[in-house]
Image (cartoon, rainbow, N blue to C red; front, side):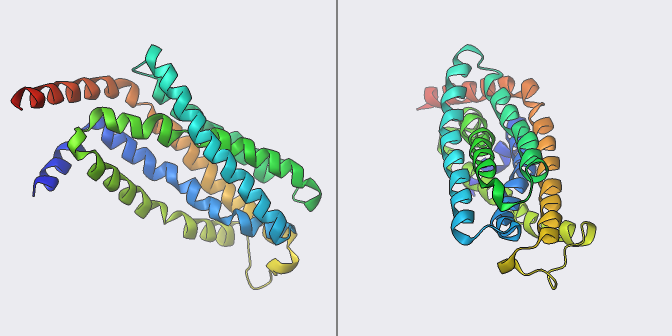
Length: 242
């Protein structure tokens, strides 16, 4: 019962609402990324080459999460009200040009493995900041300490449930709009037409959510400071009662 009361009180915090809302949209591209392996194989890359590309992207994401967190921590010392929001918006925005370069600019040929590798690594470094630079630290500043674990779990469950819709959405867009036909595509031998259709489906499900995510972070410039100050007052009152 106490958990439910705490949940309702936290859900009234505007910063929490905005972060959860952008997280629902922002998690869609990450779910769509699971199709990268299939796309690589449709281009003609073998299993080893496809795995190497995915590994480079994962390494880039891990490095980027650390970089984004460190950078946001340092900037927030000088700009406590806006630094984390700016870092998150930069990271979400970078998903747009990198998705465009990866899915449309680089020729879909096995001759361009190195170009894919470099792009995926740099993409991973720049688009993986949001959680470590903004979402999690800002949650910690506006949510009472005793409820943080529960709120983090709620956020993950809420975002994950909606993000699961991205995978079937990619399939629908790829088939209905761009003409992907699973019956005529042999992944083992590659398919230029299939790779093209899937790349356009991925592009749709990545660029649009990344762009919307950038916009959804903007209201935090207006509400984060107020919510953080309220949380500080609440913590101070709780300490006085102890």
